[in-house]
Every structure is written in structure tokens, then in C-alpha cells.
Length: 102
Image (cartoon, rainbow, N blue to C red):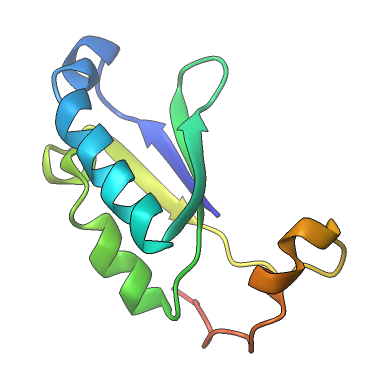
């Protein structure tokens, strides 16, 4: 899970939304992102990511226009799901990824 926190005013962030949407669309299509959206209230966002390693996730996030324009900061949280709905089982039944320590 990746938490994004805005470090610039929303007006600065909104100027990069078109590129951000293309970035999200691309990585949802590849399967890197399972879900994404804004936090409520709109102080940042959340991405449920699917990456083989911390490096792969970092490489993907570095493509984000929000990252490139320094309008958000990220916090990546690795967790091991032990309970989940059966719909997610095919995604979660894969071998664990390598450690994502910072």
C-alpha cells in the first residue's frame, strides 16, 4: 500500500492531473496498481500496489508526475494479508515478494 501526502497546494497538484491519470491508467493496465484514489478529505491519495520488489515499486513511482513535480511524498507500507475475500485469492496466492524494507 502506498500513501501519498500532498506537500503543495491543491492548485499546484491539479496542474498535473492529466499526466497523473495517464500514469495511473498505464500501471493499472500492467497490474502494478490494483486500486487507487484520493484520500477523504483530499490531503493525498492511496495506491494498492502489486510489485515484485521494493525496487520495482520505486521505479514505477518515479514515473509519477506528482513525484517528478515534487507535489507529494510517498510512504510505502508492506503487509502480509492473512484474511481476504475469495475474489482476491488469485492475486494473493503468489509467493511472497522480497522484503520491502527502507
